[in-house]
Amino acid sequence: MAARLLYLIFIRLLGWLVLLARSEAAKDAEILVLRHRVAVLQRATERPRLSWADRAVISALVRVLPNRRRLALIVSPRTLLRWHARLVARRWTFPHRRPGRPRTAQAIRTLAVTMARDNPTWGYRRVHGELLGLGHRVAASTVWEILRAAGIDPAPLRAGPTWKQFLTAQAKSILAVDFFPVDSVFGRRLYALFFLEQGTRRVHLAGVTEHPTATWVLQQARNLLMDLGDRAGVQAIKFLVRDRDTKFTAAFDAVFTAIGTRIIRTPVQAPRANAIAERWISSARRECTDRLLVTGLRHLEAVLGEYVDHYNTHRPHRTLGQAAPLRPLPPLSADPATTVIRHDRLGGLIHEYTQVA
Image 1 (cartoon, rainbow, N blue to C red):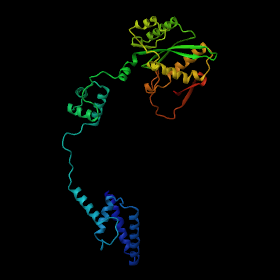
Image 2: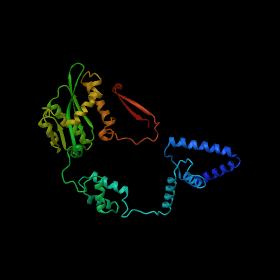
Image 3: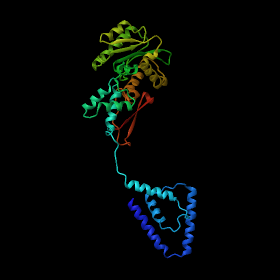
């Protein structure tokens, strides 16, 4: 700012030296032109923006004018007095801080709010203890004020969890089962039996048949538990959701109750009670079976097997943060120009895109 002021003063001094060589008539004509320019500027802009250097130059030049009242200026005398008052006030104003304790750091406030939202059963005392355990020295009353300011009740939640919280917590231990009917091009109805892990959204295609019987369904359940046992997933199944189809017999339920699984039967004609399984059927129809002609049993097994593999290993899921059930999201690529290749499934019906290693 000081350099700008010195520059303006230097320019004005050079202008005065140039004026010494000019005639009085030329000076009078220039004054008239400048007055008219000021009048035009006042019509266009009522309050021009001036820097502090401009204010200093104008204030210094106005003091040496012979008749300041008649001269058309872009500022009024009252403005000049206000500038001087501000300069004096700034000269004699000393910095001061607000009374009281300093404000708690924003990082600590954010951490306290995050803890309270992640743990609804924690009160402000518990949050205060966690902060002290992390080395943040704050008072319990400060934590109380932080939570109140964020719209969170400082008292712990004494009631039970909501249905959404309960289902989210139990999703990893819920297994759903249902039939997926598909009509072939020759009018034969085929049935695909599938199991779906609600926590991971992984689909297990148990088998495809034209005549599903209770004995066949029972054998598919045993095959599934053998497969889950090989990867230590049997003990994680706490609930099995199924409808009231007569093919799900007591022997079928006994296969799961033997490992500690609780059978949950949906209400009559209530497909929403098994919504995640119904959602998979809708996706499979829209993306696969409704877009091709199924010729027979073996064809449907091959088609659904290919689609299930795509669904489990590549298709993104919003509930998983756009990751696939069996494939986490890769790290962000630093080079946006990385080569991407396309892999076709089901004869080009479905496309998958991957980066070149």
